[in-house]
Image 1: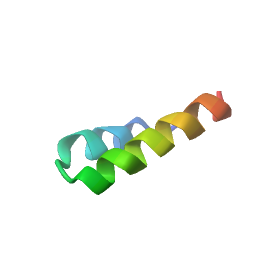
Image 2: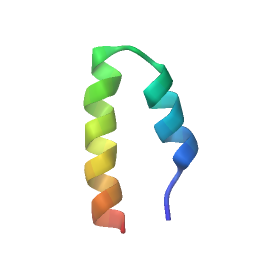
Image 3: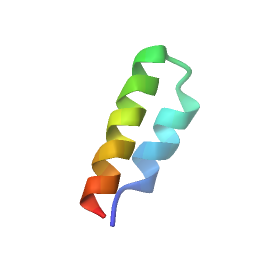
Image 4: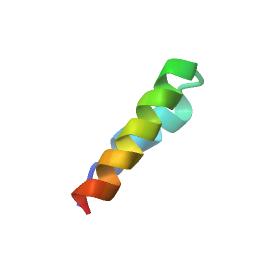
Length: 33
């Protein structure tokens, strides 16, 4: 389970910082699963 909306928001934002946070969230999502 997770929040797909947060992933979509990060995808839309072109900031490089958000890209890093996206990778971190992906890593956390894998752990959560």
